[in-house]
Image (tube, rainbow, N blue to C red; front, top):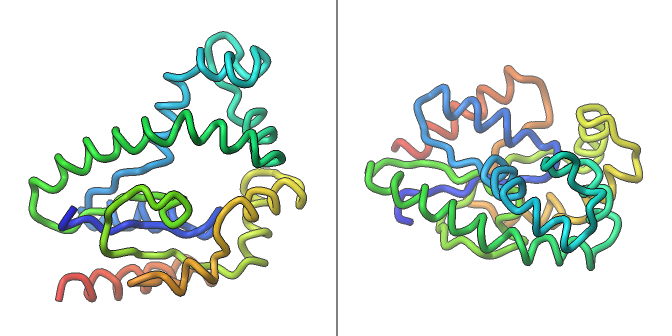
Length: 192
């Protein structure tokens, strides 16, 4: 994947906002979360088999209930990942092959890029916000308890470690105007 740039960060660091800003500037963004939601829903029968019928209501996977289970129990999280990750990767790779044909930079928004190590993308952009701000945003955005938000944050590689491993960092610790400026500076950097 010669033209791909992995877009990653942590829960509530602002990856979606950066993704939207990049799209507004005409960049292609393959969203692993969107792909994973599609794959999860396609795998509803397997979810019933692995976790029980209470996690699927009228054919629709109850993501909130399943999330509460897997983020509280690493063994259950590994079971879910073993089911979904190969299928998600296959679909992302299919979409990336189409994007590669364009011959210009594009992004693959992969929240667990470093954790899975499943993607051979050479350049990595991390959207950064300090852990305390992540926690505050996750609780507010997703209406989560502190305990649930911490469980999700702790299920990922620490944001400071991601920041160290990045080729590019966009700081999202302030307001949207500052973030827009950060994205613009990044765009200039990859265009030169």
